[in-house]
Image (cartoon, rainbow, N blue to C red; front, side, top):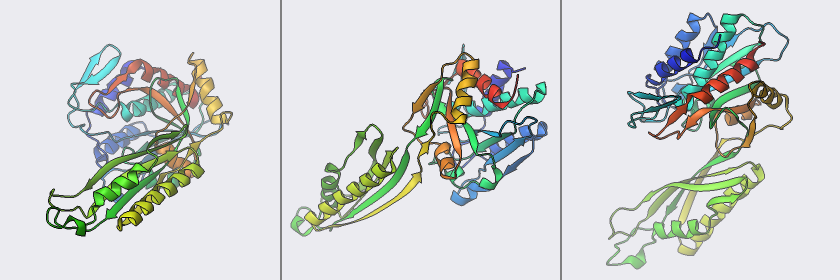
Length: 369
């Protein structure tokens, strides 16, 4: 039988394991030991080595005995810092911390829910489909783990990713693509008090360019943001170099490309006016995730929720996840909520009522009652 007590105990055990992005080795070891103890075969890769981390992606396989198509269940191992020495505080159905660390509900709640559903499948011996368990590393740093994943480990093309904020009714099926951008403006250094006219202030150049850019909510499916800017030193020196990083997200690839072009045009106009120069780097951080509402994966998930008396809240979201990267490799994914609250902050908490609900939904998706 599914056990809420076991679910919570496992979650508490996991959040005490230090597993920041690029540092998930101990968490991966723990998961692999859990799989070995249950005789679940698995594979892992060396993804972390590609970007200076020590983590790895793990894909396990539970052989089914029905004619239903295979289905994968995914969650990520890494956690936002500060996450060393997590001290959980339990108040009824809410688990939080002592406010000195993040909690790790994102995404160890997802791992816990998946594991508890599998635990019941194994213990009950009920008929079930082929099940793939996918535990990824470094999701929080632009999905670096999945970007370097050995995709040959995962032949199953449909997945349920348990990694959304909100309650168990949350079902995200569309998420935007994102362009990561870095722009550097180069002016000319001069003494600001003696001969400022000989200089070209890169801060002013950047300001002129940024003032013409579309920043914030551009339309219902497109956003843009400048996240970091740096340059200059002393006030008596005309700044000759400024760099900023930005992102543009959109559910439309055409709009995404158009906004990148517009941002660069703003740079061109500013440097032409000031006699400066610029360098712009940009890359697709992750592609669009987009499923049709009537696809089989969504319908199966909605039905499983209905069986648990949950009305699915089908959502188009603005954030990226492993599901986006997987979409670029031809995988279909839905993203489910599991009770996360105030993620990425020391105010993070988990509503275990919702974690319990999604565990039961996952169990229904995995096999017959």
